[in-house]
Amino acid sequence: MARRTPAGAELTRSAPAHWPGLNDRVWVEVQMPDSFGGETIRIPTRIEDAHDGTLVVAAPSFRGDLHVVAPGLPVAVSWAGQRGQSRQDFLIAEVVRRRVPAWDLVPCSDVVVEQRRRYARVPASGSVHLTPVPGDPLAAEVDPQDPVEEPAVSARLVDLSEGGSALSVPAGTWLRLGRLARLSFDLEGFPVHQEGQVVRSLTSLEADRLEVVVAFAEPVAAADRLRRYVMQTQIRQRRGGDR
Image (cartoon, rainbow, N blue to C red; front, side, top):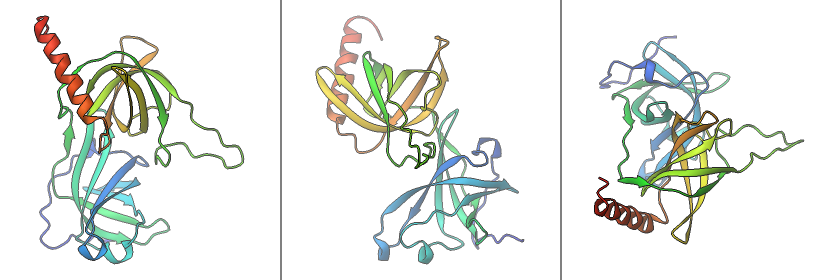
């Protein structure tokens, strides 16, 4: 089947090595028109195929999709990869009504990888309690006849910033790239509860552990307290000659 390219689309050479793989979970962002509220919606879906510079995703369903989705609609796709959180802008080239409805997407920007944090980070210590976030699209499917909940994970803080944290976690847990997690920890006597997404996963010097980076989801309820902690830690580091 020939694929149609929307008129006026300025296509760029794709970087398939940086794209997610078959069946990988991704997030699709769509700007809704004013008649449907005008907000940007973010919906989970998965990769169906990638060929000839075209990325194919399973068509996510949402309120108004039958009226909004059409060739030429700009969308953004984001995913977690080994290099960090990746994002790329696309245009819908074709809406295919197969057994599994799909969107054929053509890139109109380069892949952007957020490897560096937007916020200053400082060393931190202490224990962290991590639990799964209900509705996480990357969670294992639960057998309704024999539901088994994913267990909480005990981790250690490595560093901390206003926008996220690096954690030392045991190897072999459900914490992997793209997973959503709820962090609970104590920050100088104040309890912090914050949801986020695992955007990096690195090997650790300890053979039985991994280091994962969790980007906090907006809004960050404890942002002011986290910012104050980072600033005070930086001041102590400078006074102690640790720059």
